Amino acid sequence: MSDTRLAFVSSKSPQSQAARESLEKRYAHVPAEEADVIIALGGDGFMLETLHRSMHRSVPIYGMNRGTVGFLLNAYNEDDLPERIDRAARAILHPLAMTAISDSGSEQQARAINEVSLLRQTRQAANLRVAIDGKTRIERLICDGALVATPAGSTAYNLSAHGPILPIGSQALALTPISAFRPRRWRGAVLPLTAEITFEVLDHYKRPVSAVADATEVRNVVEVRIAQDNETELHILFDPEHNLEERILQEQFVP
Image 1 (cartoon, rainbow, N blue to C red):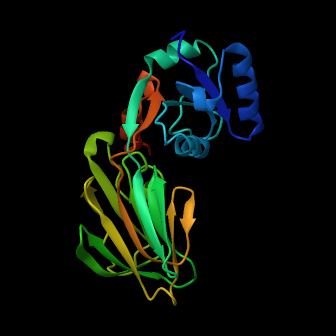
Image 2 (cartoon, rainbow, N blue to C red):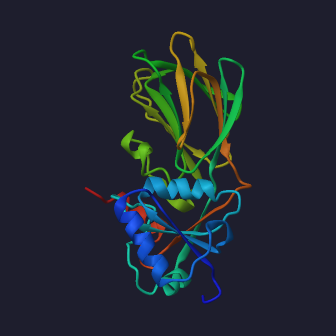
């Protein structure tokens, strides 16, 4: 581990900044763009931000929790950091690729580690046509919105919307409605990782919808296509006793 170049990055919170200053005094470090491993100090939101910033080079990220929940992070401990990184279990994730077409005809692409969400922009419910691999499965979904979640993101917004928790090795995506009105009894679907999901926004001028891929929002969309990006790999490091697979499993037993 002595040859592994570390970089420390932190959110703007005082406790994250203090942790970064303390660690940089204790361990040799380089700028993030030169690092072999990046140490992210903050909460889950900052961890996602760090993963997005490093997506182009797939550098491993080892997060330490200086926020609240810390689902994607390890416990904060300044001691024996090189040894902890050396022992860490590696989770390799693939993001979702979103292609969103707005009512102006412009096309925007973005990546999502947790989920892609379609959300109504006004008081009126969204009307969505849902197709899987080119075949229409729901002609008109009347709802507040819908989302497609990865296994890593299935315990976040997807779980709050009563979607299923997906184990990391499940090779599946969750398609989950948000406050569905019609079809009233539809609760979503579990899809293979190879699926391409297409949402067509019906009555988009009267019932505008936005599409959100993690922190990237596209407003007034008329069509959104979502599929897993198999070309991009994200590497997250976890302490062996609290790896990502165990955390997702444990979420199914939280009261």
